[in-house]
Length: 154
Image (cartoon, rainbow, N blue to C red; front, side, top):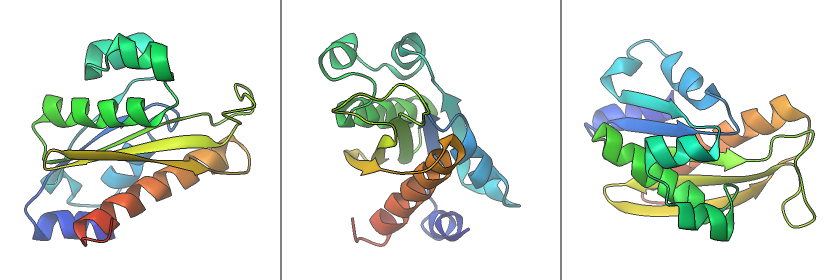
């Protein structure tokens, strides 16, 4: 895995916080032999309560922006980075479908948060396909965001 090699070369560790991907990002990262050298932990926070309790996502963010938002993805990334003591963190939140979409946030809307050495940002993505496809594309986008950031191309 490219990001694993990049993390190792830079002597960095990674933590992930997942909602709509249901652990798929952590699964993909840990399917690589030797991943324990760079993968610190993963947190699956599906409910609002778990996002607040486990990751410290402020209730005010959830009320004002919702769980499917850039603000929530950033807070999730910051929270898991702090929890794990990891310099790098990824967070994924979105609507994998087939239900749950709205006119402003249709099924396939996903936000990926990235925290690297204290700097945090999020990107919005729109993916098509069934639930499995949205989850896979979400993890691919997250890994690509991390790769680009580590290369200095964010």
